[in-house]
Amino acid sequence: MLVALAISANATAFVYRWLMGQVNIVQGEPEQARGILCTGFYSSAAQEGINLPSAGTNYNAPTYVGQGIQVKPGAVECRWYYNNRQYELYESIEASFSLTVGRWYIRDFYGFGYYKRNPDDPEQVFVSIRVSNALDEAAGIVAARLFVYNAQNNQEVANLNLKVPSGFTEPIALPANGAFRLSIYIESDRPVQNADFRVDFAVSPKPERHD
Image 1 (tube, helix red, strand yellow):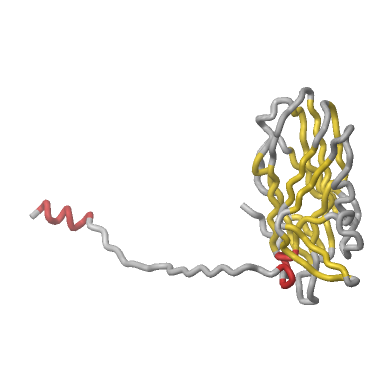
Image 2: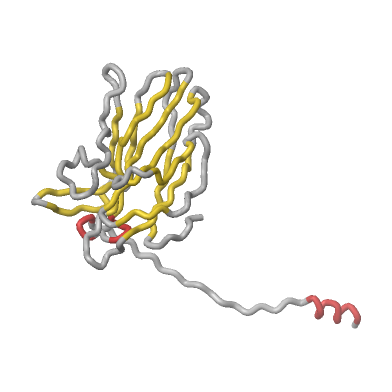
């Protein structure tokens, strides 16, 4: 009897609650993107006449004989028409920097903007940035930094060390029809082959920190 009482005292009772989910995914249409969906990378030099600030003017800058900067855009996320011309913002870019040993600063190699399509779209969005894949294994690279500037006033809004993985920055306000300019500094003391890095941009309609 004593044993039975001990078992009863340690017994656990359960009640159940549950979550049910259903996911439906459709192909988004760039012509209908608005709000935070209408943010992305662009070059005003590659898309002449775009009604966003001048940014990305050195996306194809030469560096040394026969070499230079190459930027390949990813999927189109937002598309609109202005003065009878088509313009686009891209989900991603792949940038290739062919450099010599030494110190290089590439100013304004691409832009990141927010196009306000409709009057009731947000007056600003908030961008957080992190280094998710760093150059830490590239021993010949002494220093590498990504600089992010407000395209309207040229104020620095972010400065990321590309040799160290990082969490997301505090949210950075990006006004409607505004943009950031991206610049990069690379310093090396020996040849390096195929050193890769990745930087993520997270966009929100509110100034909430991205974990």
